[in-house]
Length: 191
Image 1 (spheres, rainbow, N blue to C red):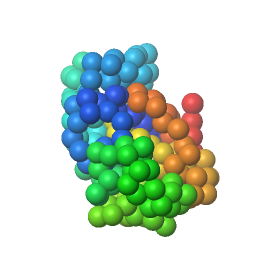
Image 2: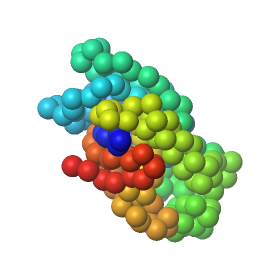
Image 3: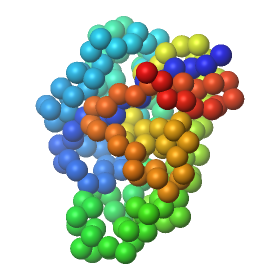
Image 4: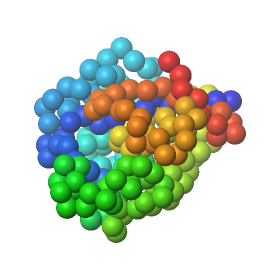
């Protein structure tokens, strides 16, 4: 039996832009509005599973309270840890570390930011979370509130893209995408 996941990216954050990774930024008023607008008229969901970072968790708690849904948190749904690049913009990195940034953009699986999390490990972590969800909640529709990198990874896999194209997947703040996870863990994009 398949699981339906509605993936919601957090909205705009206070420190905005750049590689936020494991930094725990708060949402702006616009970020809250983006997320509220994205879920309007969507669902129904059986539950909400969220990254524990506040830009996801606070909205998840609010929505769970409004809809009377259980909310759980899974640290494996956190964003890629960018190491020494955390908090920096691509423009700043182009000035200080242009070659390394180019290698990362060309194939994020083959180049890891200094002191960062390898994308292969990130992929394994995220897929482990999705597999746990599939085993626990097959047959349900679950709202997963997470990050751009998590969503790019899952969408790229669902679309069958080569790993070098991971960062070409576009996921705006407050974007909502539907994925199906079959019993074998195979992803397909829905809706």
